[in-house]
Length: 262
Image 1 (cartoon, one colour):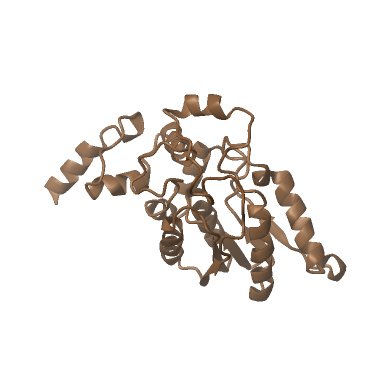
Image 2: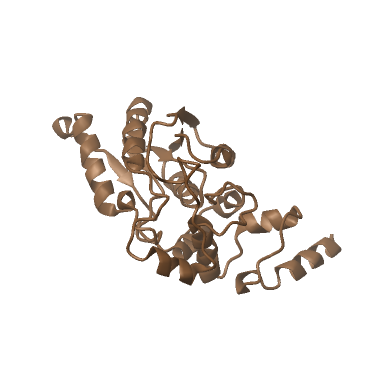
């Protein structure tokens, strides 16, 4: 395994978990974040915060601008952001279709630019938080896509002839959201950093609009029976009430006792 890794860091839950996974394995970890004209800037600020907490060797924000087109509400503010009352209803609505927030060729572009930076930094691998279990049927979040991108990078950089390897690691690719939460708990510093991540497509903090990413994240923490550090942070800041779900049971009582003891 290489000693140097470059992490594609969006500032969200999965890429942050992947970052701390990389920190646990590699001697030096760099991070890169893309500004591609997405709906909101909050995730860029989240990526900066998380990168600082992880102590990465470098963190570059690459301004791609509004180069990616499509009907996704992430890149076209005129498109409505679909919301759902709960996880079960969301699953029924989405079914086998590609989620409306899909941005065509986004991850392919990210891999191309990130591979350029990896070559310059002396890293022979990329690390991303792509996950097949996102319940959104994103074509560019599949292991088959990642494997083909890995081969493309090897040929594009001439590594196929020189014998040098290049890897794209996707530590969460087969994990459910609840499994990813349990995985994050094993990585020093990761749960603390998740309090400053950003997932909501709406750009809100705390996340209120029930968009796909927000519902999926909440369901993962519920199934893992763990409170979401982001929600707990917002609650402690007085910005929201704790959700009425089992994974938050007793948290308010414990917090009151902790404040009393102090």
